[in-house]
Length: 157
Image (cartoon, rainbow, N blue to C red):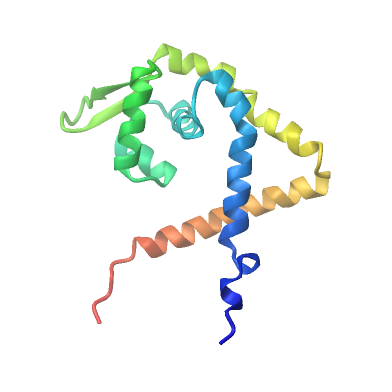
């Protein structure tokens, strides 16, 4: 039997995984200056866009499990970037809100995406960057497809 389907070079997931890791590594210098991790940066971006969200809403936007997000939020609360407060409409629900420190970090973080683009501009042509933006659009289609498939109820055979 031929096992070409198991060759690393034939996998869609590997270049996505490797590119993701390398992009996160490229962000690291800027994030170290801000004193946050990449995952914390993602949480902050969600909250900068819409402050005061529930844990489940943050987890859903980041495509993470709540049991992954909860300890992350607790750590960020100890860093005084956000607070966890009971919902005004449902006391059983915890809302995540930015602190002043978390809001101020947005100004300092505004340069982070531009710094990545500068790094890419050094090695990529305009056409390649346009292709990367098209790839981003296609990746969102893959995400939507896989999420929809994941949320389908299991069929009993």
